[in-house]
Amino acid sequence: MRRLWNTLLYLAAALVVLYSIVNREDPDAARRPPPQSPLAERQPAMRTPPPRLPAPGPRDVSVIDLAEKRSSIGTAFAIADGWWLTARHVVDGCHAVGLVTGPRRATWAQSTLVHPNADLALLSTSLSRPALALSTRSGFARGQDGFAFGYPQGKPGDVHARYMGNLRLRSTGRYRSEEIAAVWAETDRVPAGLTALGGISGGPMLDGEGSVVGVMVATSKRRGRIITVMPRTIRELVEQHNVPVRSGASLPPLSAANYIRQANVLRRNLRVAQVYCRVEDGRRRPGRDGARSP
Image 1 (tube, rainbow, N blue to C red):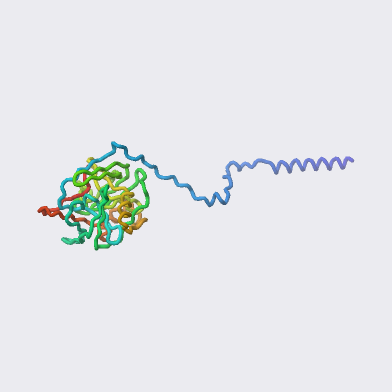
Image 2 (cartoon, helix red, strand yellow):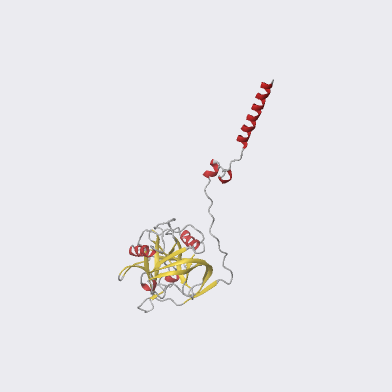
């Protein structure tokens, strides 16, 4: 009897020890991440959308009075086979518009098509160059980089800027229009001694991915602010005339370290070209109709 009783005690003690081992707390459990299901592992990470800025109010307006047209120069860039984009005020009122291809040489535009309510124009020419691609994005993030290329003061020049916001750009004088435009703050301009940007109007504004996000049209009264046509305005014009433009990046990524080199390549290949506007008014020397001041 005593032997049976001792056997039962030993069995009970063994069960207590086994229970404590199975149910003891794991000291590393709090430090371990919870297990994830296969579905959670396959789900892509969510990206935070860029901040959207409010639409410009009734007081956020810049007015430009377009003076009487005279022979002048500007900038244009290729967007499709034989098609070029530029600013409307660069080609408005011209008797002939040409893309400069060399010293005292130009390819004359066969037709000029303007946006009815924005500072934007299309040129149809016999000159075909690889097109710059249009961005598919509809808006900007505050502080986003922009790189503008063209011919300020009739010579090669470039601007690095960052997006600030939008405003209403109103044109009066030779023609009337009103549009939503983007405002950028300059961080750098090349060459460093360049005192004015007249002549860069019509040039492309590219983002860091190498896609066109705007067209240069004006500078503000205070040096260091530039204004461009919005991407949706560009799409409106090219879609209206069924121009077969490209979408997506067509250049290597752009940065403050390489944008000058890329700009020189585009000008050398005539993907960004100088525009000559001829007005038969008896004046011989062209002006620099670009980067207007509101």
